[in-house]
Amino acid sequence: MPVSQQPGQRWSRSPVLRTGAVTGVCLSAVLTAWLIVANHVPRSAEFARFLRSPGRLFSAGLTGWAVLTSTYLLMGLYFERLYSRVTPFHVFILGAVVYGFFAVISWVTTLMFAARQQPLAVTRRRIY
Image 1 (cartoon, rainbow, N blue to C red):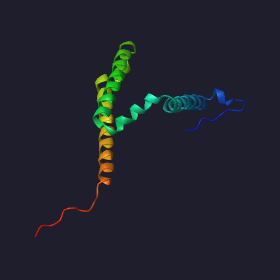
Image 2: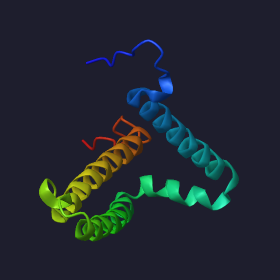
Image 3: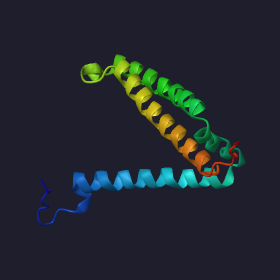
Image 4: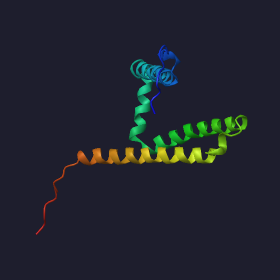
């Protein structure tokens, strides 16, 4: 349902526009930091190798997701109703499934590119 602005109401008082503007600024900051790191930090190229190694991609993803789950667990001790919908176990399993899916997609893509580099014709001769 669209939010109607009353006469004299500025855009900065509209919660929809304010939230959208703040979200846009935050996403722009992440994009800017990402581009700076990708272009000016030589060691950042090591992270691109994870796409060629699905096992390492999955392990790194689970490690990061375990840290996120631990933070979620600790925040649930302070915010009493945080676990009312999703428990920390469900958060961890959700991350494991998502990272597992992306690891499989990465593995299949790697296999497809490797298969494209092989000749399609059979090179063996028949022995009569």
